[in-house]
Image (tube, rainbow, N blue to C red):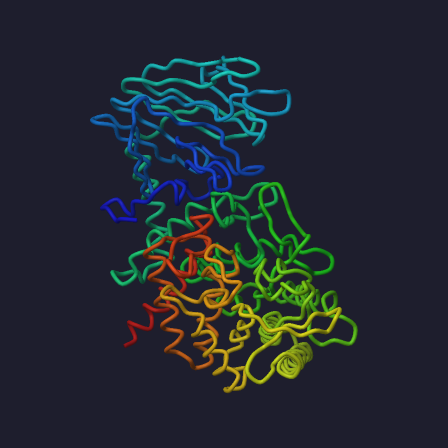
Amino acid sequence: MTVAASGPVFSLRDIPFSYHGSWFCFSPVVAEKTYARDVHLVSHQTGMHPVLRLVPTAEAAVTATPHQLTWSAGDGRVRLAYDGADTVRLQGRGLGLRVLAADPVLTPFSGPYFYQDPVDDAFVFTVYQTGRRYRITVLTGAVEPLGAQALGTAERGIALSGEWEIAIEEYETARAPYTAADTFEQVAKAARAEFDAFTDAVAPWRSDHTPAAELAAYVLWSATVRQAGFITRPAVLMSKHWMDKVWSWDHCFNAIALADGLPDLAWDQFRLPFDHQDDAGALPDSVTHSEILYNFVKPPIHGWAVRRLPPGQDVYPLLERWTAFWLEARRAPGRELPHYQHGNDSGWDNATTFDAERVVETADLAAFLVLQMRELARLAPDPGRAAHWSGAADRMREALLAELWTGDRFVGRAVRSGHTRSTASLLDLMPIVLGDELPAPVCAALAARIESHLTAFGPATEHPDSEHYQDDGYWRGPIWAPSTVLIEDGLRRAGHTALADEISARFRRLCEQSGFAENFDARTGEGLRDRAYTWTASAYLILAADHEQRRQRL
């Protein structure tokens, strides 16, 4: 990533080019870990679907900034900018472009159909995979249609040459003909102003000490979609690559990052999974445009998160039902401590904590619920409910220490067999999130073990000396944003500020070096998996904002 006068310059292989509210983006990433040669218009309605392929007529370099995408070949160039959430403008000077259907095959149930609309002479693709239409309006220049009304397998689209300009829109069934109210330069300038306003809101503290703040803001801004399908309010997807969902703990970090500057959008992020809370009080595992999954849940970090959100929203009933789910549906008879049914429930899908057995009482879960019940006590509508939740939190904390603390570490306990087990997973150290709720000797022991997990880039999720450590092992080694933020916060509240400062500094440097990947190789710092992950960008913004506030107080 470099910074130009027009903003950060980034690689489309890492971060897609998109716009706040849009359901489509431009990227060579067309499926999970699948990279095409050409930039594609990729829609995230009904799933991740490459719709159109943009092919310049000469080998061209592609440059992306927050407000403009540019193809350059010699003296020729093509520029692209968003004209609102569902429309883009493209302009070519000395460089031609072919806009083609990504899928050449039309069947009765899949693929693109292409025709020229006799109403306004625009060219239209109607695409089964997204259930949407994509209209190309030629504003200036010569155009050659390819494969109009063709059936079966065919090349479909248009070829542009000389000097030309077009608009592309994503819509449902019909809309008024497109008219160009502004020049391309005005469109691009307006897009830049929208992004600048967002960045000024979420990162007004940015400085030379936080060089990745603007790009982090772009990752959040560009991954936001407007309400549609099961997305009941404006939502920051985890990515506009293949991780194009809202998972029910990821959203908390995005809400916190947005809280100070854009409180309404922050609350939208927090509340969206609660819009789909089921009759048992459980949150879905994930929500996206056309799918809600309930087969797993995610950890109850929501009480912890609410502490960082602005006041003014009544979330007590939502948190109460979510907490009751864990206490009623996830506690075996006669047990005080709740359990996960699988690693996926913890968010640490394949952590070694779950190697021996999957249905396990773990210390992190109890710790999160203690914090959540503390928050319920604070938010309770009457003293009786406050006392109820305060007492429940005390009992769970006491059970956590009495049943899972061995004197130097926390263990997990299998619910069916009763077997206890310690591992080299960072998950076993997550009770540090309780901060000063833990006895000082417990905090000190956890802090020492956390420090032993540190690499040059942050806390590895499996100890680097473990026989189970894997460089690209998902939760068996790589560094992740959520564990880093939770640990940093807990250490700071426990009084271990020097270690918290070091973890914050290492993770911020990691993002400045390697961007905002889903996770990172703990030994090399290389970004892994999806490279445009919003909770990673949010973690950077959270840690950077806190660091800047501390620095300015000195």
